[in-house]
Length: 169
Image 1 (cartoon, rainbow, N blue to C red):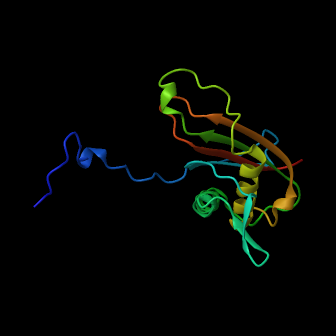
Image 2: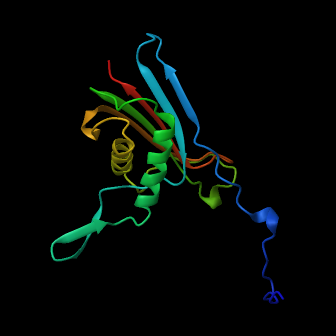
């Protein structure tokens, strides 16, 4: 038997369940020269930074963000699904557009620029390491050009990251 609800409480029904996550969006195209492959994919979720450490004693430190491992796993899985073939050799250009959740107070108003934490470079660092783990390239040191943009989601838009990887010509 179900327990009675407190005054003013609401019991979510089956219509409140979160829909299953779709397969990562994948797009592999070629540049106009026809030779340089371009891989583009979207990772759903709130982008998380990497780089801030907190000490735990005896000279050891751990990542300050407890959400980082889940974010890196999501990026790694989406990158593996999107990238066909062996790891890229040589210089690589990575473009990342980080879409952060909208503040509820914004409602349908235009979102102001995202100028608060997390830092764009720390969020990009997490993506670079995840792409290395996904074997998109051998080492994130191969990234010689980063294009990073962070913004708040438009009304109805899903937070996450749009990531594009291409060989640098």
